Every structure is written in structure tokens, then in C-alpha cells.
Picture: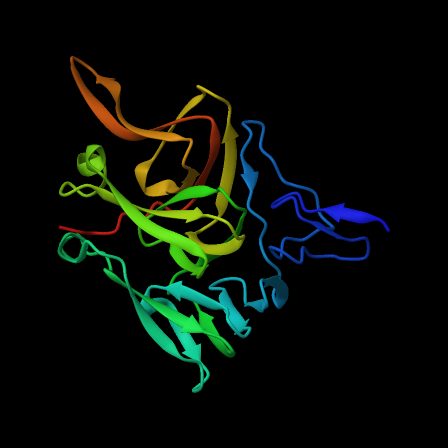
Length: 265
């Protein structure tokens, strides 16, 4: 039987499939890649369906997309409470304490996540234009995500967070930046992000460097090092600097085209 490999997540699909069963990416269009190596994240078509574990996700709309999930028995997804759009009355919810409550609260970050358990239906959306980015997580994967970009993850993916002190000046003029860290252990899982505007991804070679506007950073593989750098800019007799986020490969870097700087203390 002919098989089609998804260019986004590399899963194999039946020969007649038009969308990937694992991530929902269109299979009947080629990757769009710029000369610099940035490829567009697949824009999921309205009413696209894909599966993870025993659950089914349907994507509704395109401008402010909705992820509607039919959770199978024994499946669960976790999320920040304010992204919940609706749920069936019978779909149970529980809380997931992630620790670091006071520090996260002072930084304007949630310190509790919510779990929705199957069987049941539940839907999620962020109140902003953009696109959903589906990242299937294979065993042993570790991905860092900027704060306020995470939409949901399957319950088998472990969650933690790290604080990037060096980005205090370039992001918020205050306490720095938190990154959410997601790690898959023995079983595969699925994570979904919301990117403002359009989302682009580039794979860096070992030692390859790029500098990114901090508000545009969306996610990276844990193998990519994130540093603070100041670009010198000469203006007449005086000089000033532009603070940027330096990414050093190897690994993937994802960016969003709308620069968003969430305010925190």
C-alpha cells in the first residue's frame, strides 16, 4: 500500500489521505520554505480532524481557530483555565498544581493548570488571531515554549518551567521571562500551541546562530541554546544597542509574525 509521509511531523498516512492523521497538516500541498530556510507551519483547514491516543481533535475556523476534542476513555489534556471555550456537562475537570506558585503569580503567570478527563467533549481557543501549531511529541522529546503560547497538551507529557533571567531587559523591563518546558518520557503525546499571526520554523545546524526579536520567539527544541545579545547600532556620534534573543543550534526554532510582549511585574 502506498504511504504518504507528512512533511510537518513525518508520520505516515494512507495513500488516499489529504490531511495527516497525526497532526492535521495538509498532505496535498508542498512545504513553503523561504530562501533563508524558514518554512511555514501548516495552516490547518477548517474542520480538519486528527487523532492522538484514543481521542479525536477537530479544528474549527481559521482566523481565531478552535480545537474541539472528543476525549477517549482514560485520556486527558491539561491547559490554562482561561483557554477553555466550552465543555460537555459530563466532562470532569481537575486541577494540576505545577509548583512555584508565588513566583509564577508575581510574574503574571498561572500556577495551576486544569485537566479535562475523558470520555467527553471539550473545546479550546485563545482570544486572538493566529494559528494552531500541532507538535506530536515522540518519546524522549523536550521542547521549550514561550509563556502564554501553550494551548494544551496530552496528560502523558510532563510539564515544568524555567526562568530566563538574562531576558529581563529585552522583554519586560522587570523580572525576566518564563519558558514552559514539555518532556515526553515513555509514551508519545501531543502538544498544541497558539501562535499570533503566522508561524514559521527553521532548523539550525550545530553551532549555527540567528538573532530573533524577543516578542517573536514561540518555541525551540531543548538542544537550542537561548542567549541575550545586544546589537550595536551607530547613530551619528552616539551608539545604542538593540537587545535581541540569540538562538544557537542544533535544533528547531519557531517564531510568530506578530510580536507580542505580555506585561508582567
